[in-house]
Image 1 (cartoon, rainbow, N blue to C red):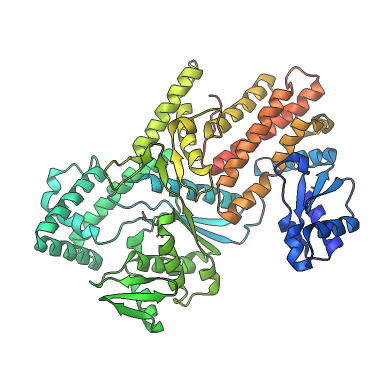
Image 2: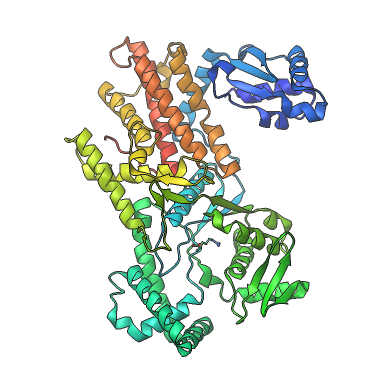
Length: 567
Ligand code: ARG
């Protein structure tokens, strides 16, 4: 396969004497095709070469020697060098590579030998699985898939919130009134009620609070009754969460939650003690940090904290997964928490490889178009209901558009869930997300259903033709028109897109890409008749249709979205 970017990087290296990989990393793909197929921003070299970008551009251009079979033109535009590829060669190379790799097109071996740990989803036992956990589940899941596709060795961890003093309270409430509640039928709602009620009682009666504290202590010490009840709460909650995971297709390699670290925190405290940096502060024990609030390791009552458990988890993950990167996908509300934990982790005596590999992947809040989506103020949006509503709404749209469709329910599931997932991923993750049914279910918008709709169109074209031509039979010259070329150039960016996703831990780059590819195909489809043309023309266009459909499907699946065959 001819590598155009590599060719440009080599030519730039010869012209400048600078390091090729660095030069290559600066090469961009212009948004606007009139700016060429690749662009080199000369301002990137301004510091090194101590010259103004236009001067650099002129000097490079004078010395530049490119393989003319690959690059037909180089232009200077305001400090940029724009490269135009030879379309005939380009088209042939891209489609040939597709034919060789098929479903594996776009993958690469950049991940070989590298271990990635992704900590995502992580809802809290006996509490509702809320919309923030949905974002974590969807973003973490998409990252998981893309890393894996690029041949990283990935471990997905659901660091469940299954530990903490609230369980002492829940156990007490259950002891007192367990029989009054239908925990088996509706675990999370019922446990929430118990939790609210026991909290009230604790406020009135100090001795009840004391009992709750004791329960938690007993739980930590392994008291069989407390452990039994806790296990029951955990299992019932997980069963309820599992329904959401099944709908979304979420999978985890490990379910080690916070409780898993209960016997592993002593080592953290001991190690920190030895550094001499663990100090008393108002009865608690903390590590003082520069430029941020201290990190609490032990509370006044001697119990450990969320941070201590995260520190124990870092030790465990370093030793068991030997991670090159450990990602934590949570809302930006936890930015400080992870800053503190990552700083304190440097005191645990781990190899630098590990402390350097820790990375928080924060995301924005979800807002309803009409206001905030809150769990605190009581208007809890239950995730399972929300997903069911998405499916019901998708079904309604389908019934209007295509009442005779077979398997309407199955299709509605894919479309409804696809809409929610795509909506979660389509903007850069740090932005707050607006949750609006009409926007996300709009088949014409920049949405999941739009991508699915274009995919279904590729399917129906191929079905109508009744065959998929072989690559060997294709005359690539037929695909030299602007609309076809635009599709092929977008196809060629797939591998680069996936690399960017893992570089920035940003699935939205792939979501945007799928929109771009869908739009390029749509314009190709509007400009070019596919079926009924001369056989040679039909074959070339059918082949392109086939490739686009496959990439849309692979890409959507990586995001966690299923494709319907019809809709
Ligand atoms: N359970 C936590 C929450 O709901 C998220 C846990 C994130 N992972 C971690 N290792 N701290 O906020």
